[in-house]
Length: 437
Image (cartoon, rainbow, N blue to C red; front, side, top):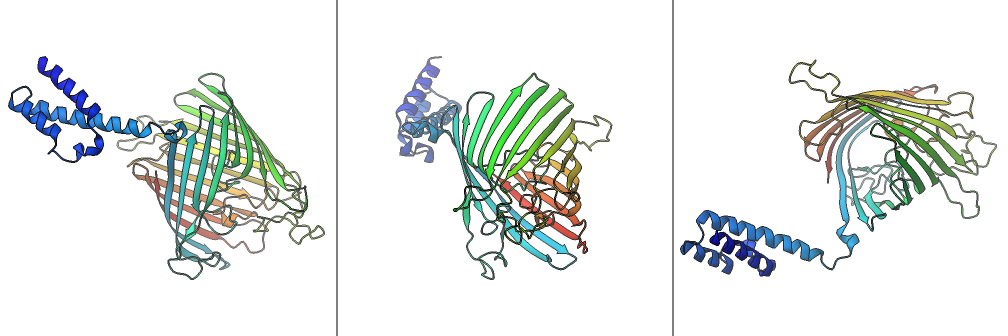
């Protein structure tokens, strides 16, 4: 007992007083090692006990070093997290009219910093590669450039990195949260469709969450985003979204999310052409500008996702196991036009809820229909027929975990025009390696 009291005191004294910067952990030939060896020679400690003591001193010294590094730092620095992702992609795109036939390598990098300033406030800042000047729907960089960027025909040209997001968050209490700036999109969809996932809108959003009980939770979100700013006018175009929903978990086997929303616009006929680069919506040349919008695009929106955990139990033969199966859908109808006014999506998935780790996987399939004037064409998924409207088709995704925070994704689109004289079917294949950190 006495020798363990002596050893414990020695471990405490040395780890508290010995400067970590002296390099104790770097090598065995130190004064501390010599002292421990003498205790072994005198029979106070055995060799195994000496090894345990050395390890304890290294561990305690490192803990003290970490604590000292934090001492004197502002609390928000200590509460800052850094993360992001990196993606390398091979993409092949073929359209029968010959306008989009290419094969290319692409990459995307995003780096995010989240700093908790207090129990109620935090700031999120992100930088990322860019898919071209003023391109809100892509952070992809094409290897050695293409005809739409400054790097065209310039092998190994450097890549531009831009401010991808910058917003502040304030949590009033357990129910109310507000954020403002250039933000992650607060509008929920079961799958990327009507809103491209790379869009980081600019404006503000308020969210309310209420847990009724262990089986029912409610939420509602109100958002306001600017679309353009005119220096000579106060009638700037904008979009607002009111979205509410219920999350149901009746038991461990099933869960569901039911959402309704209304997306409204203001001043989009005020010469608004910015971002409407696809020009697939109906236009009215009587108005100012050859691409002035003919219709309004304010419309209700409905979405649902239903999931089942371990749906087959022991019905499937070993080693086949499907941990989760789900179905989802989305629908909107624009009341302004008389035709081409509907957009909808229906699909399903099976596999793991999250793909993170070797052997985890998920397969998704969805059919999508996007009428010409059902939705403003600056917003849809840019991979689905280049983000145009008047498009129908399907998408299939297979995601496989290669290791923790590393995945392989195979994504395939087949789409064509709905009413256009030339249907021009398109095949788009994307094979990705993703790293998350």
